Image (cartoon, rainbow, N blue to C red):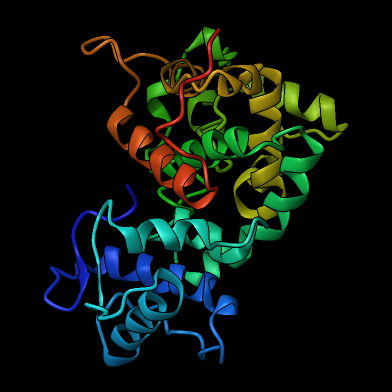
Length: 277
């Protein structure tokens, strides 16, 4: 579910939930006549948002007496989901990455559109899994380079880190945090560019490359097939491996929550039967 608590009149109005409803109302505004002005996405409940909820309930939901509140699992929220346009818009990305700033969404949106299509990440289910993993790995577009120094990867032969300093040199970069000399080398060979020298930082600093290397990792690991089966555990293991203590990928609950959110904005019904192997 994309909101945790009620939004609107007498609601809890958690900031993240209010932002979500404001985005959903904007996404549905074309269906309301006369079309209301777009809401400011502030995360704060205000009179324009209350009025927009009431107008949507009256005109679209058909409520004779609107209560100006959106409840988790309620009719208004379902109507807001159903009424979203089918396209993959910047507002939908903002809804999926609800904590990302507008500037960060704009930074990556165009490249996500083109490169997901070019790499066959082109069905709602594949897109939902891909965006959920990017959301977790990048902190919703906040980080395109691993925060840690990379020293922990020093000497990791399984990552191709065979030279002194490789751990730091080839720390996680890109929105999916591609790590290790072997991956940087393979990606460079596929793109006919050497990313093992100074250009390695472009995986983090160039938004097009940050998206492209993430798509490259996804495709070369065959993750589309796992996404087609809606297997969030196997998808997450491909991205992050398994924690030795828990047996699960790090941040698995967050990955699942972000997937549920992506499914909502991409209009995937989570109550549908799950795909079979």
